[in-house]
Image 1 (cartoon, rainbow, N blue to C red):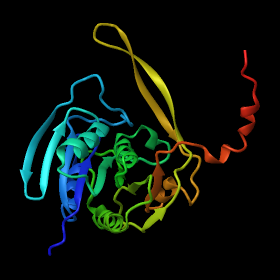
Image 2 (spheres, helix red, strand yellow; image 1 turned 45 degrees about the vertical axis):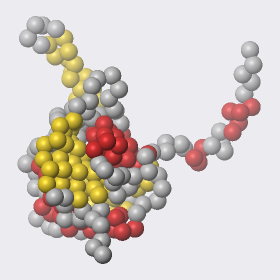
Image 3 (cartoon, rainbow, N blue to C red; image 1 turned 90 degrees about the horizontal axis):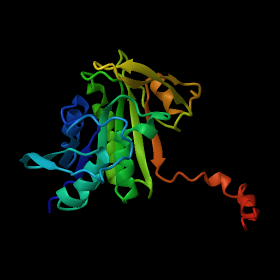
Length: 261
């Protein structure tokens, strides 16, 4: 009896035409049957936002053996929700998001629509991976990622992931040297230092543009930023439980505070 092909749900936050998304689709179709639910527009920095007050629309764009494509006016999280609840005949064996144009390492992950989709899948018991490239170039070269993405995905399909854990995988942009390998590492404790730039529109009304610089002062060999800067793929096991578990016992003294009027 022929083995059933894995069912793979793909989404992204760069819009349906993004080069990284199309690369990911071509790779995942080598491994299973693909349902693509992409955003109509760029949804970068949407994090885990979902649509609750506006209408969600989905259009089927393409259908052929092993591949169905939908587009949605919602966020990446909306795409995941609709994908596994409404658009696929059965739950996916894997949810994959990306390939994002731009890194999702260090604190950038908090803002990421790409990783928001991955966390959404993980919260609902689905196996999920997010892939990102450290380049904002819309015409970036993704061809050096093929083998690594396929190998990581095959391993996850064959072995699964621990409950409540998903993967955030980042790649350096293409260079003259091939990728050195994969580093399993922690998220660097770096951040964006932001400021608002005051501007004026054509009617003379003031508005603000958010700008900023990235401060990277935590780059030790166990971090994702170190891996990327040294031509490794970074793989960070990620979870949606934000509890600071190590602080539960030390902070038990809060329970002795008197709160009676």
